Amino acid sequence: MPEYYEIKIMGHLDLHWSDWFAGMKLTHLEGDETLLAGTLPDQAALHSLLERIRDLNLTLILVNCGSPSTQDADKNNKE
Image (cartoon, rainbow, N blue to C red; front, side, top):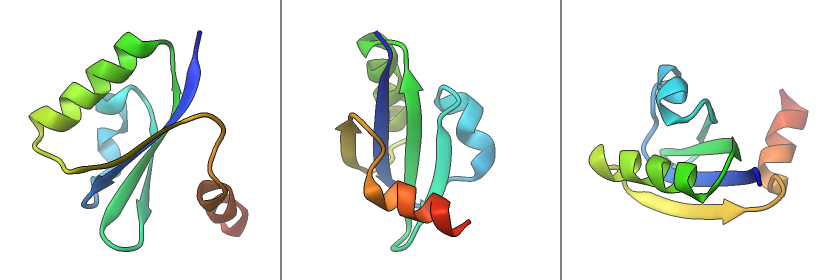
C-alpha cells in the first residue's frame, strides 16, 4: 500500500535529482538541508531510495512516514 514519506538530508540537492529519487518533490530548507517528500508504493521502494542516499554519501537526518508535516504545509502556503 502506498505511503507518504518525508526524508530530510544534509545539503542542498539540485532539483533535477527528483527523477532519480523516485519522483519525490525536493525542497530546499534553511540550514543547508533538503526535504524529499512524496508517496512511495511500498517498503522496497523506500529501501531503494535510502540505498541511493547512502550510495551518494549523503547525510540522512530524518525519515518520517505519514501525512505531510506542518513545516512542509506551511512552506507550500507561502509559495
